[in-house]
Amino acid sequence: MSKARDRFREVLSRPDCTLAANIFDPLSARIAHMLDYEVCFLSGSVGKVANLGVPDIVLYNSSDSVDHCRRIMRMADVSLMLDGEEGFGNAVNTMRTVKELEAVGVSAIEIEDNIARTRFDSWDPGLASQAEQVGKLEAAVAARNDPGTVIVARTSALTYCPLDEALDRISAYSQTGVEAVRLTGLKTREQLEAIHQVTPLPLTVLSPPDDMRNDPAFMAANGVSIVMAGNPAFGMAVKAVYDCFKHLKDGGDVADLASNEASPALLREVNRTDEFIQMQELYLRS
Image (cartoon, rainbow, N blue to C red; front, side, top):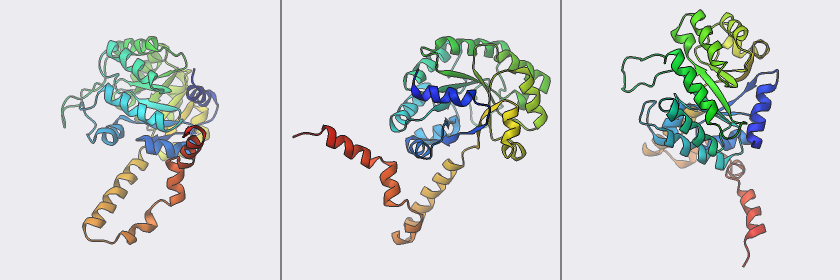
């Protein structure tokens, strides 16, 4: 078991609620590591844009995801939880996806129950059947080579189903060998309390309503181990690059941008200059 996976499991085992850093590339992962975030999360939507410059659609495949995660793990020693989409195919495809992602050092892999859209602006196909998703999650668990790798059952059932049906799905997913459940579409405290009653597994939640996001004690008391605040860092980074390039294209002075730039000291820390100098001193010999 890797140290990164050990750290991730330690977070899941605690009785409190941990904020994850929503990263999007090796650079953002490095900064999250510098700030001592215990968990990093890479979502599919921003991963596609940051890695390939494409929208959240089927132009992205498992090999793209594996390559992206490999570069992140080379840059930063982080406990990375990844949006593994729907496994990039059926249950057998999902097994390959898990093996490949595990091999590059990912700590936790989410497998969602949404059916992947095949066209832009098309009818939403909704959720896979419960039976199909149970089989896929069991396959994902069986595919692990390292028992330290955490398989997370991601569900959008709260968006698509009545609460009783969503609870039935979550209960069934929890019996597949997965070790956490990821919730999307959580709207009310009553939903979270009901979910906590039907699964003993730790929960992870993306962008909960503010009344819950600002009440970590309530979330922790109802099984939430990890919360994610969406992708504001990605949106801010895109805007900063756009504004810089536009300013220069419009004839603005470079000097006008200085107050918004990272300091030389911060850049040096981000790119690990001192670490590489130490390696040179140790190993470069004439």
